[in-house]
Image (cartoon, rainbow, N blue to C red; front, side, top):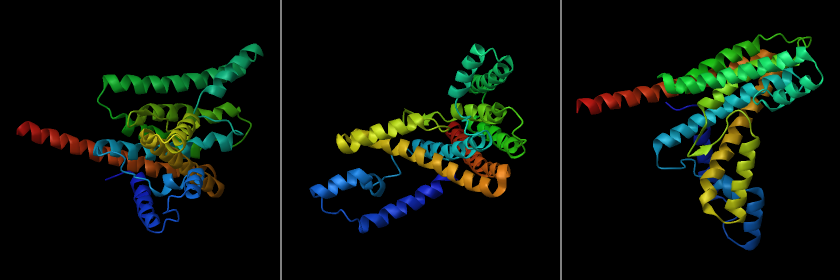
Length: 280
């Protein structure tokens, strides 16, 4: 059983096969090459989604894309509830801490400090549990995300609360999520924000198409898909929020459940293989 990303990638592979039959730039003349580089048609239509022969790595990548989808889905919450304050990173909160110290606004400083504390505790727990327990962080992360989705759905919508309060659910849940899904294929790649992923993607695309360095192909594909799934998550989350309000964030529980189910299936399969090898 594969996570939800497998369904999307299967459809993309079929579209890719169809596009190859009717691809407009079959003749590699100068203008077709330049135009295909500009609109990235080579990247889109000649994409190989099974990027390595290693099935375990490909499964990890599919899990990573699903996690990026969830990261985008839940990452929208503070943006639509707290006037475009982003809760998947600490940059704005840390800056707010410094400005609160300068302004001697100790109440606001306390609120920022609580945000730092939540973010830090979550990272600490993920790091500690990975070394001192047999808990699967990916499955646990899906449980944490599901609880966060529930909090988001029933969070008070009145703006008389300090705006930073709306960042607290994402501060805790998505920092844990970030630690549970650090990357794949040897690349460090966040599933909860896009700045570095976007930089890596554009850099790899430039190396691949304009510097003709094919060694960047895997990197371009991996970061490109991570960006795609993250923003599909944002897109669907925003539509649901438009129609359902904050209750729409409860829908994140479904992909969380599918990802956790997939990881459970893979773990049980690995354990059964170990038992068989021991008996032999």
